Length: 234
Ligand SMILES: Nc1ncnc2c1ncn2[C@@H]1O[C@H](COP(=O)(O)OP(=O)(O)OP(=O)(O)O)[C@@H](O)[C@H]1O
Ligand SMILES: [Mg+2]
Image 1 (cartoon, rainbow, N blue to C red):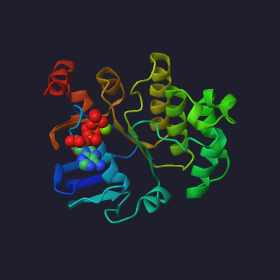
Image 2: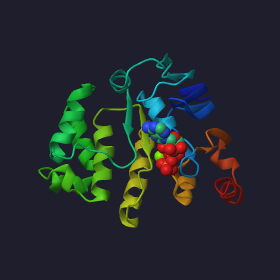
Image 3: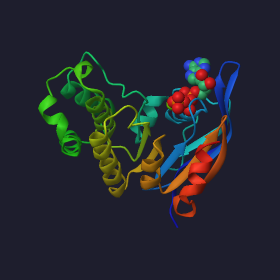
């Protein structure tokens, strides 16, 4: 049996009086790809922000690698192997691609410079752009940089929020391949993805959120395409 890598129990979260997530339970096994899906505004990013420590839950627990991280600040989570590439491919716009990678790498000190080489091997398009400012990259290039920045922290858990949003098909295919390879390396992946076909190809498990609650959770293998489409139409 697989070991749970991330366990979330009874999680509630929101912004001030606006309650967004209700009683979320989610368990992700080591080395698997968990896809979280749902329509706009149902709370997917709020869930990821809570797991990354950017938002404090009002109730519930988050356990990563056997440690209760619910009250840990974001940088402690990162040092312990949790990496987050937020929605909208956020990078440090004024810095070069190389400096973006070096800064992220130095911030965690989880491994040597070979992590940067490995990230560039994973996304070869970034190699000729190393001295370009991140703010000048195209959306697809910036997304690859955002994932590469997460990888140089040597994560055991990689969290990706809509990595294919607004990106042309050829780069979407490269990102899909990268996610497949990353998981094959043993890194657990938590992926929010609205592009249903892609999510169904990548996912080991599928969780669907609607109005802040989980309305479906299970193995991808147990989900027919018809059921998946029906769930996404909620
Ligand atoms: N900083 C914030 N302050 C107040 N409300 C917020 C904040 N961020 C998000 N919300 C609200 O929380 C709800 C969930 O937003 P969230 O970004 O988690 O949705 P999502 O599922 O990621 O949507 P999308 O698919 O558009 O990315 C929405 O109603 C949103 O307006
Ligand atoms: Mg979102």
